[in-house]
Image (cartoon, rainbow, N blue to C red):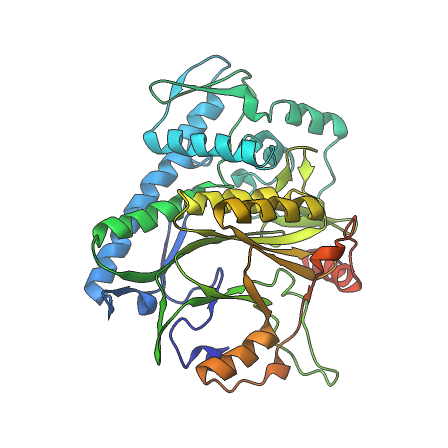
Length: 422
């Protein structure tokens, strides 16, 4: 897509795939992969200098390392690990950040009627999606027995935790364990945005920050011809399945969709192509449904959430909401996000296993072909729209199916990935 990007910096930023430097921790790192694009980072209309960028990245890396040391289930001394290792009734004092994050978890748990829950680590361990299984997430394996699922489910209850003065956490069952993976990256994105805001207080900052599947868009994009709002590509969760013309010419199929005209928002995507395995023609995602104790299975394959930064903790909120929406049946998810749109200005894009997508909250969403034509008209590009695949069809919000059924291409994708993963 080099030609498409060439006319203007940040013309189309692809979620998960920012161009620029990144900072990541090795070893037990479970959350952190920070990306900040220096070519799109402007302070008072001037691009950030190399020296300032280097200093900023070091400070941000230090900030995120400190947060990871508090939140990670893969670090024995972290707040979360100490809570997980505690016995029933034992009070564990945690840091201000961890206590704040847990307070947000409680709020989002209630808001989503339990569809977002940080208390599901026993189930993640049971299904083989915990950090100690890194490198083997895609290994096919049989389902745990119903007895083991029910046993893990019984201790995967957010209500088993109580919070007291002095930032203390107490659990009622020794087997209960937390995993903040469904919200911590969004919280970290908020911390980065806050750090940048404080560092350049009183100055206009235009920048893009990405932590894994969480993005913060500050201000606007600087491009040839002036400033404009950001256009964000949504990763195609089925990009592994090649698209081509009748004569075999390969088509560009990733990103599959674009959100056009965003500014000062937090964006998060939850999808089933990150940590998953396939067994007997079925995808088992790392996103666990706390209602069933099993990987979410509602016909939703991707949820992207957009939250205005004026909403407090917008990154954490977006992160939790995308997880919650992924665990809902389609009709419930649509209703959920429509309500959030009215209350908080939230937008969402839901992609389903029948290869349709639903745009909610007033988001301007285009297929790749539509976006190319839009770019040609508004930005002076000259791309051939016929070289871009229409992967997903716009769904009709007034005619939502009772149950999402796999389309032929979805079945083909599952068969292909199954053969690829062995």
